[in-house]
Image (tube, rainbow, N blue to C red):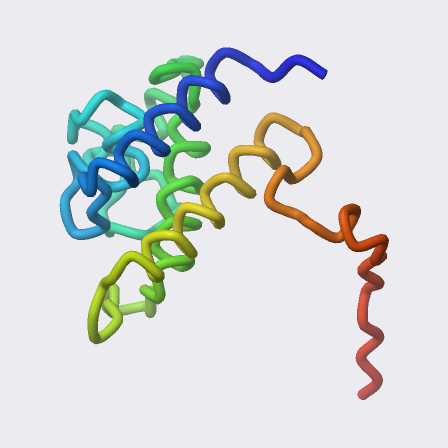
Length: 146
C-alpha cells in the first residue's frame, strides 16, 4: 500500500528530528507540528491554548477556506500536536497545560509514537505502530457495566 506524500514527509521529518535531538515539546518550532511545518511557528496562531484542539478565529478562517499546511488542515495540525503532548506526558485542563516533571528520550519516543498513530488515523491507514498483528493478538473493546 502506498502512503500519502504528506504522511511520508511528516514521518521523515519527525524521524530526523528525533534522532538529531531537535524534537522539543516546549518549542513551537521544534515540536511535532513545528517539525512537520519545516520549523516554523506560525501554526501556533491557529489556537489560543497550546495543546488545545479548538481552533480560534484565525484557525477557523483557514479551516473554512480549505487551507492546508504541508498537506494538513488546521484542525489536523492541532490534533497532531495534542497527540504529541499527551504522549509526552503533558495534559491540558480548563485553565492551563501541565507538563511532566522531566522530558527525556523515553517521553519523546512515547510522544512520537502517539503522533505516528494520529497521522495514520488522519490518513485512514492501519496504525503502523500497532504490533498486535505481529503477536496475533486482537484488541477487544472493554465493556463497562455501571
